[in-house]
Amino acid sequence: MNADDFPTPDVEVESVDPESLKDRIDAGEDITLLDARMQSDYDEWRISGDNVTSINIPYFEFLEDDIDTEVLDQIPDDRELTVLCAKGGASEYVAGTLVELGYDVDHLEDGMNGWASIYEAVEVERYDGEGTLIQYQRPSSGCLGYLLYDDDEAAIIDPLRAFTDRYLDDADELNIDLKYAFDTHVHADHISGVRDIDDEGVEGVIPEAAVDRGVTYANELTQAVDGDTFQIGDAAIETVATPGHTTGMTSYLLDESLLATGDGLFIESVARPDLEEGDDGAPDAARMLYESLQERVLSLPDDTLIGGAHFSDAAEPADDGTYTAPIGELVGEMDALTMDEDEFVNLILSDMPPRPANYEDIIATNLDQNAVDDEEAFTLELGPNNCAASQDSLAGD
Image (cartoon, rainbow, N blue to C red; front, side, top):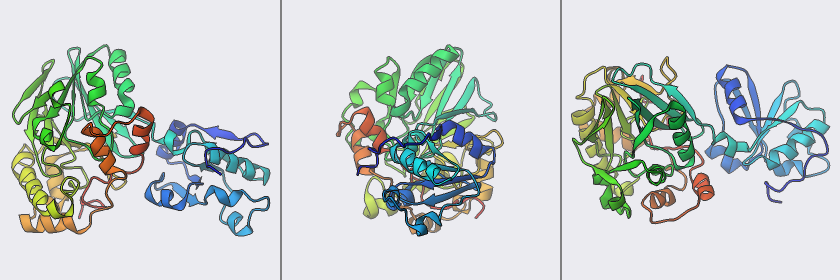
């Protein structure tokens, strides 16, 4: 039986929408989840948190008329449970079965697909350049984007294709004109939204240094080179070449206040160097990354904020709720940023996590060498981003 084709339960099953579940987790409420997906899917990607208890029992364990007592013994009966699956079908069926057995159960609407649809906007309060800076956060994958606006003009950095309409709607609500959409590099963990936003009349911008990877649509967009400046009202966005994670990796300095580093530097780790040239090319890419960090990033004033394109479960948000931190703070907390080159290279090559799911297909899609519709694009990028060089935080090491 397909996990998405389950019959409607005979009993009424309450549901919880993904945003409400996240609000409860963020508020510190103790949450118990019964994840009915296959163990391999669960091991790769799941909802977690200090106050989240997660149990994995695949849906097929509930298909028998008499459920094995060893299965039921794993399920607590002294608290409320939320059952979830991939899309919501199997979880509703499993929840209904448990309701009939007397458990206090609801299920997550749209499952992990619904969880992946959460996209939050948080103001970067420590940004002190002209205008207002918003950080977009996708909790399911840790993807981050940025919206800078001033004097009725705006720019979006590292937009996701899945949320193209969201950016346009936000611009309308704020009564601002979305002028630019920037990519920092050819992403390996999500489908870029730059071309889709460009199709809506916004000027799409990609790094010129990324074109050599085989971008087929380069001539349709503006190509940014190191030192180029783009104006948003009174705020200046400066292009800063920072190769390493990829050869075309490019950061954008937002009015001398925040450096949007893409996948070059995160607040808890540094970039992995193996997604473009694989294991063989990783050592050279790591040395390139070291040079970029030392000469192009850490040479900026200590109070310059760093805002990456991702955060992991190991990242601690700032007081304003954003995943940003001043350079001086990161240098003080992350030994990798003060190591010599050989130590740095050895460190980041030593403990890289698994590569992002479907990363080769995602790269091909972002190069326009692989055409996918919106649904397939959304499915390709489900799961953790895994773009950092370490599983755990390097900050505080």
